[in-house]
Length: 114
Length: 115
Image (cartoon, rainbow over all chains, first blue to last red; front, top):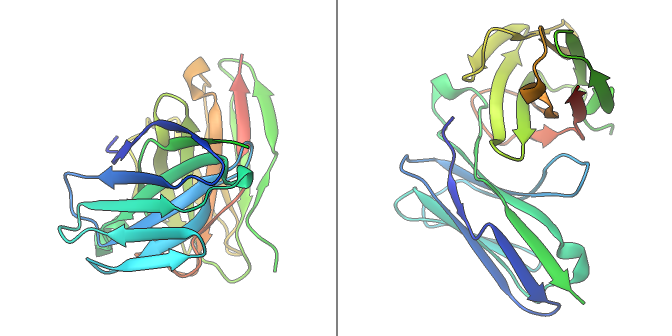
């Protein structure tokens, strides 16, 4: 099925470093979402973006909705050990026919060394 | 407020058997979406139910089916299980359909292993 192109696939960083990951798509999305998934759990929403160009922060997390509506990035500043997990981007076209269907990126596995 | 509840958490089945998974949405949520998560394919949309009607369907074979009850609880069924059906099955609930906001929340999933 269709997926978003998310990069990098994995990152190994030191505690305190900043992290950046991004997603691109060949299709336009009108909503971009960023999730974090811990082992054995479902994804938890971190940030939601609803307007092209929008820049939104949630604590140490900042995400932007690309102007073309085909990309988004997530930054994590001053990483801490509990940031470890898999981060997913997801898009929603916000069309009537799409219901609540989300398209997901492949995920970025983040490892933080203390 | 209780979150999305999926049961069972873990399941082991044999090839050829069928399985039923359950998802209880957050109280008041009327939309339930199901996803399959595997290491190779990532998170793939299965289907969505809203007000007891299938609203949307992903690209999965007919062995995968679902339904929703009047209290918004949803079940998905997989018949004639194959080894490749081993996955984490996630459901997500939201207040309404047609959008990714209004409290779109995932459950913890059911880990299905087919042997």
